[in-house]
Length: 112
Length: 117
View: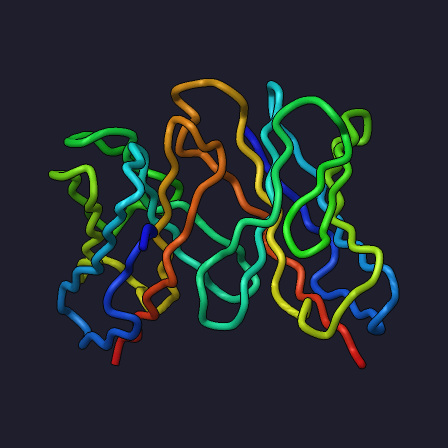
């Protein structure tokens, strides 16, 4: 069953802690993306990667970090430097043969 | 810089009536345009895209969209709305065929569609 898997679906973090969100795809897509969704603000790009071992900052990269060691995986770490991390995080991927991006089911992060 | 505007926060329509969700865009080159739908606490589902060719694009679940280059618009339409169409709809744009903008898929703020029985 092909697609993008994000885990966990819900995540709670204490202030001052780093937390890593998982994103795995088996679509053989080269490009992967992380977006943050807040009510009324649409989706904002955090980081994206076009190829393994390479990634670029999006519009709101401060307080976040990523790695792309494997084509299938693009984990996002929300660091303690992120001032307001409570949000819905969406991972997506796209390939050379597809123009559109395909999305995972999202991870809802809540800081407690 | 590219941008997308969805001028309506919410669209209300009665079941069986036509549904239109508006989108305007701005890119420096030729656009790739997309519509996605999101149900509560879920990811985005792809509905349709415009790349090139016919200005009227047909997509999933009976939705279609019309590309208008002169008005820089890409409105989503459905001839007869269903209660199950109630969801959050996003328009997105990407500048065509430039490596640097591969990741720059820009989304609008979203439009909540409410279809009443």
